[in-house]
Amino acid sequence: MILRELTILDADRFNKYIEAWGDEKIVPSNNDPSRYQSFEEMVTILALDKTTNDDDWVPSMTLFLFHDDEILGSVNIRLKLNDHLEKIGGHIGYGISPKYRSNGYGNYMLREALKVLNTHNVFEVLLTCDEDNFASKKVILNARGIEADDYIHDGKVTKRFYINNERPKDRF
Image 1 (tube, one colour):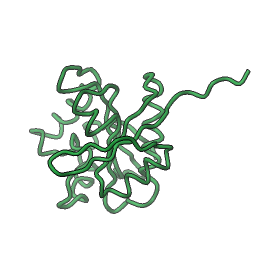
Image 2 (cartoon, rainbow, N blue to C red):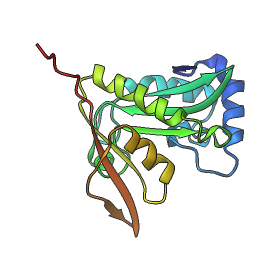
Image 3 (cartoon, one colour):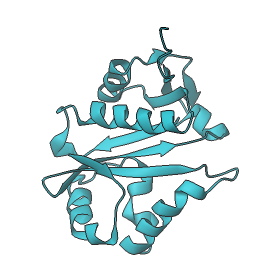
Image 4 (cartoon, rainbow, N blue to C red):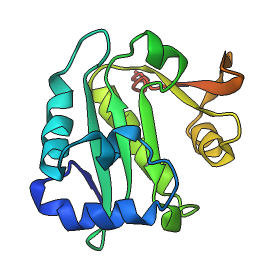
């Protein structure tokens, strides 16, 4: 398995990945091809997201989990939070192709995303999920997530969790 950015050469793999989602909402949403005019534009924009930093967009990176020449899932790692992400979204958003769920891939991607955030000195990591997303809640709790106050919007409840992502202190 490898977690990496998309390249132009991944178009066929990406199309198969998107097809596997069927009618489900694609998560993270920045993977939704309907947001872009072409695959090439999406790859370019995702690569540029690392340098974006304004009130609406924060610096982030999107990595895809590849195994045996197939995309299994993706993770969007946000290096900063804005007001919206403090309520809904948090530092990390991840999604697994429906046919690969319940195999531990979400746990793997979250662990790797925490490592990336640690290298960017993000030590208090916020994660959110919908109230009825029990699989995501389980992944977050497996990573030592501590439940925080819920955020309620439009009658929906967003569960919020924090993970202490600090490097272990030397014992000497």
